[in-house]
Image (cartoon, rainbow, N blue to C red; front, side, top):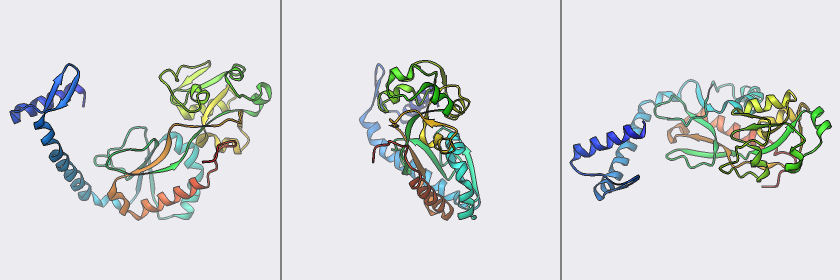
Length: 274
């Protein structure tokens, strides 16, 4: 709903109740005493409604396990491990939806989600699964030609590949992404973390990749880490689900399998302990 549409709904509610719920002063909005008194009761009612809808759709616990996740996470981290999941848990019929948007677990037909962030999603069960790191990577041939990188001067030897969400300035500033951190130093700027990996594999330039996305290619020798200074990213991978989903045996088995796989996933060389 747009802000203007929400404003119209609020005014209609105030007219229906014949009392103001919000105090408006320019662009500042605060609750009146009447609004403050109404708020907790409305919150409880909406919470009861959400739980009732969840209970009425409890049959979703049978059949396929539906999990939403980032496309980049699916292609580069999860997909190589799916044969092990199938071997260890043949009872899990995993159906995957790729999206970067938050999941509405009442409206959407999803049981859980894997997202990057800092946690704090309200009214949901959440668990941090994996820390993320940013590492400069390129092909072995390009590394042999341009050499290692340790600072901004070294980056000047390379054509850089940029992601809008993982900019080079985040590596230079030890993981801090500031207002102007997405300004490219040089080279391509791409709003797709998976494309960053593909650009690096094609020898286009030096890419700043998330470790979870490039580790397989580094292990295979297709990419090399161009710096001994990996940087911890400001966001991590989280497993998120509504409370009622924790009664699903297949979901709990999938979560436990993820825990074990991620515990066995090593951090990049040079990563600081902890």
